[in-house]
Image (cartoon, rainbow, N blue to C red):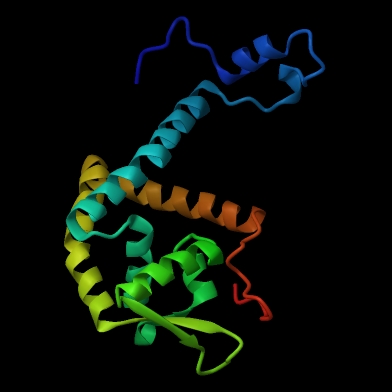
Length: 193
């Protein structure tokens, strides 16, 4: 990251400059980020932007599937009977039902999974991992784990890994609480989240 001091412009300075002479809220009305928060935010944004692309590239290059497809196959591989309700799978994979449906359609064409009515409640649809899907995720996992280790865990101490886990849980809980989940319901069915 380039060294921006002493000419560094914080969010509050930039917005304050932009809002002078307008009816926009002034700096005192907004809980601007401190210098430490701003540095952390910039670092987080770099991770949010670059890490998914790096992991997706590795999976595409080595296994021919994307990160979201891998996530779907991985969650199914870890589930009892290698099957999950579509709504639950969307929630676990951090995607909407419509995004999941499009990906599942492609994975079905590759014979990696199939959809069928839930045997316990026909109002729901379940996704089930096929043997070919199992083989795909098993083959993709070692390279994916190596990439995750390289980009994330190899540069962290054990204490930082613990902190990252705590931070991820706290921010994840806030997002789950404050944002409505489009994955939590299926048409004509009760929410499962």
